[in-house]
Image (cartoon, rainbow, N blue to C red; front, side):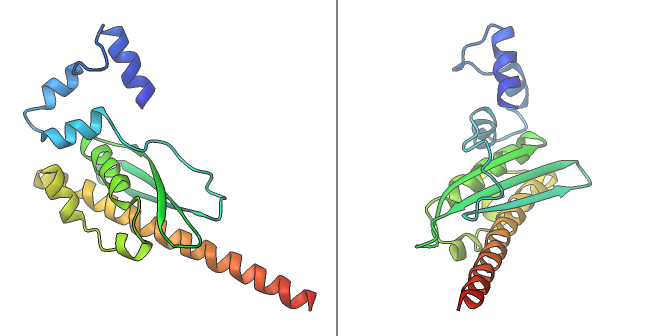
Length: 168
């Protein structure tokens, strides 16, 4: 997505500091925070889903076709989220909601991020009612990533415990 946007800007002769034509056109209907996170998304990318310190949340909204993958990287000793990444296929509000979610989870304990509500994301981005499902996806993705990480820990700890009993 990022490469496509950069190629379009280059083809149109725009520098990275200039607005894209579609940003100018949507500025009337989207809040500046949405446009900022859409034009300059934070933490785009992914981690290795098989890494035991990574939790992956993959959620979608069948009604609109938005799909969001949010990953967290957790410090196993402290339980703090040290990094987050996302990949989202969807509208500007979905991309912005994902970007905000990754910013908000970094540096927090896993239990603390479970208190992040879609209403807070929606308020921060000034999402209109028709776009609230995007912030709901972000909340669901956070919860799914934490759940995935916890399930991996149980499997890892269970396998380690099984290995210890067979060696005894």
